[in-house]
Amino acid sequence: MLTTMPELSHGDDAVNALRSAVMRLSRRLKHQRVDESLSPTEMSVLGTLARCGRATPGELARKEHVQPPSMTRIVAMLEAKGLVRLEPHPDDRRQKVVTQTEQAEAMLEESRRKRNAWLAELASGLDDDEWAKVRAAAPVLEKLAQL
Amino acid sequence: MLTTMPELSHGDDAVNALRSAVMRLSRRLKHQRVDESLSPTEMSVLGTLARCGRATPGELARKEHVQPPSMTRIVAMLEAKGLVRLEPHPDDRRQKVVTQTEQAEAMLEESRRKRNAWLAELASGLDDDEWAKVRAAAPVLEKLAQL
DNA sequence: TATTGTTATACTCTATAACTATA
DNA sequence: TATAGTTATAGAGTATAACAATA
Image (cartoon, chains in turn orange, brown, blue, yellow):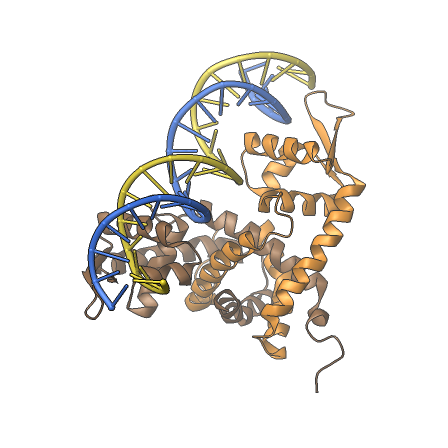
C-alpha cells in the first residue's frame, strides 16, 4: 500500500500550501456562486453529469464524497428545478438513473461565462508564468480529487 | 504587449477543471481532519497565526473570508481548547490580539505528519511529472486565495 | 441477508441584525 | 458618527439512524 519514503519527499511546504490554498479558495468560490439558487455541491453534480452523461444516486454520492441521504436531497432539489431527470434503472428496480436536462446544459454554459468574468478579475493579479503553472496543474488536481 | 483577449484566453477548460477540483478536494480534506475536534476554518486560523505571529479578530475574519461574528465563535473555541491566547490591544481598547499557544504549535506539527501520510497515499496515484506540476502551482494557488 | 434509496432528525458552520464599548 | 467585537437568532448543508423495497 504505502511506499517507503520517497513520496514524503514530494515536499512538506508544497503540501501545506496546497491544503491551505484549496480550503481558502473553496471558501471564496462558495461565495462566488454563479447561480444563487444552487449550492456548490449541486453545481458539482451537474458538472459530473455533464462529463459522465448519466449516473445513479449512489454513484453520484461516491463521486461527490457525500452520504447517500445527502445525495437524495440534492437530486430532489435539482429535479424540482428542472435540471435533472430521474428514470428507473433498466436492470435493477432498486436503483434510479439521473440525467441532466437541456435546461441544465444551458445553465452550465451561462455559469461558465460568469465564472470566467470573475476569474479574469483575479487573473489581473497573476502574471502569465503564474497562470501557466495553474493551467498545468488543474488537470492533475482534478485527478487528485478523484483518486 | 498583451494579446487580444488576455484574461479570458487563460483557458476555459483549465478554469473549470480548477474550480471543480478545488471544490471536490476541499470536501475530501474536510473529511480528512487531522484533529477531529477542529473544523477546517479553525485549522486555517491556526495556520494563519503560525505565519503572521499575531492578529486581531477582525484581521483574521478578513483573511479567512468569514464575517466577524463567525470569527468571534472560532476564536472562542480555540481559546477554550487552549490553542490561542487573547490579550488586550496595546493601542486600541476596542480590539484584541490573538496569538497561538505552544500547544497549538505542537498540534500543528502532529497534524503535518498525519497530512503527509494521507497525501503520500494519494501521491502513489500520480507520477513525478504530475507532482511537479502541483508543487509549481501550490504557491500560485495560495496567492490566488489571498488576492 | 445484503444493497439501494428514502425519511426523520440533529448537528456543524456560517450569516444577518441588533447591541455594547471605544475611537 | 464610525469602528471592533459580541450576542442572539436563523438558515444552509450535511450526517447518522431507522426504514422500505428489491436483489
